[in-house]
Image (cartoon, rainbow, N blue to C red):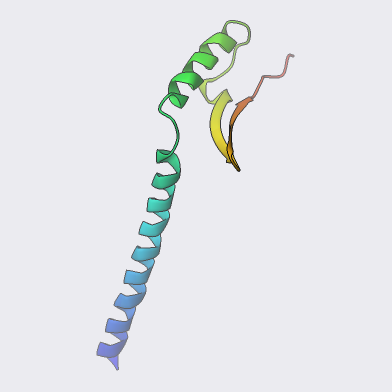
Amino acid sequence: MGLLDFLKQKKNTAETAKNRLQIIIAQERSTRGGPDYLPLLQRELLEVIKKYVNIDADAVKVDLVKDGANDVLDISVALPDDK
């Protein structure tokens, strides 16, 4: 039984590896479909906002969301509290 258990364990490892690869491929496909200008747009928005407010680089997030037949540009800016 020891040999059969060893062989069965490899199937579980292979299945786990397969699932992980599927997740990685799905993530790459979802990010690959976005336009190339989004990172540049995010940097430029950050520069403009920094002229008026002191914020960190990770405070501005730009995403392109598909809503049916429309593409929606989602811009999120986390402004600091004034104290």
